[in-house]
Figure 1 (cartoon, rainbow, N blue to C red):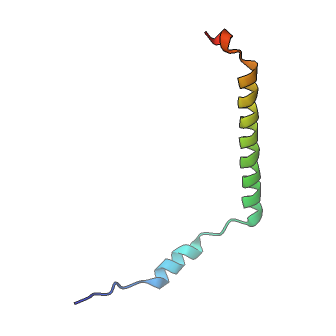
Figure 2 (cartoon, one colour):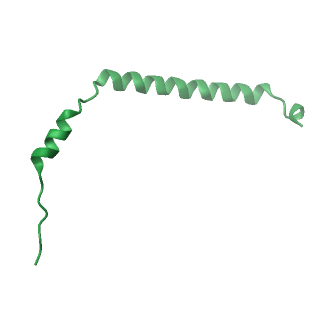
Figure 3 (cartoon, rainbow, N blue to C red):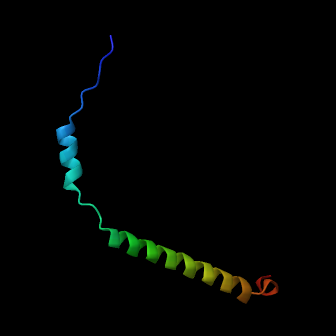
Length: 58
């Protein structure tokens, strides 16, 4: 005997529609901020790499 699981699509759809989707503008702004933070950290890391002399560390 094979039993098939019952699905309650009505309650699942109600839960999904309770969450509002994020507007596209918010996605783009968050993506742009993430890119700028990554670029700033890469620039800061490379500046530290060239600014600190290895002989001074020892």
